Picture 1 (cartoon, rainbow, N blue to C red):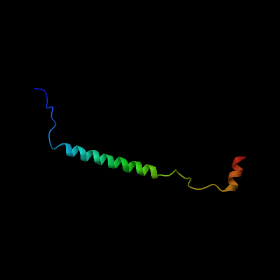
Picture 2: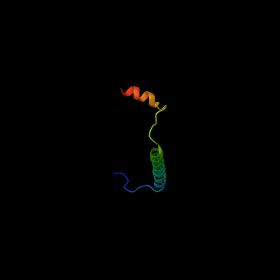
Picture 3: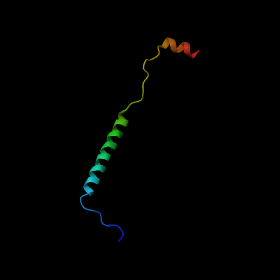
Picture 4: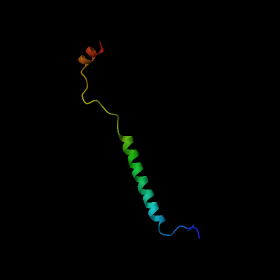
Length: 55
């Protein structure tokens, strides 16, 4: 006889729980990434130094 073709009962709920947990983690990661703003400079350069560097 080949293998069973019918899935066992009782194992589907664990699969759904793992899938739901993975979906929650993925959504949380997407929300965190969407709320992350662009990086900013640590210290802004004063205007007097900007004109000297441009020359």
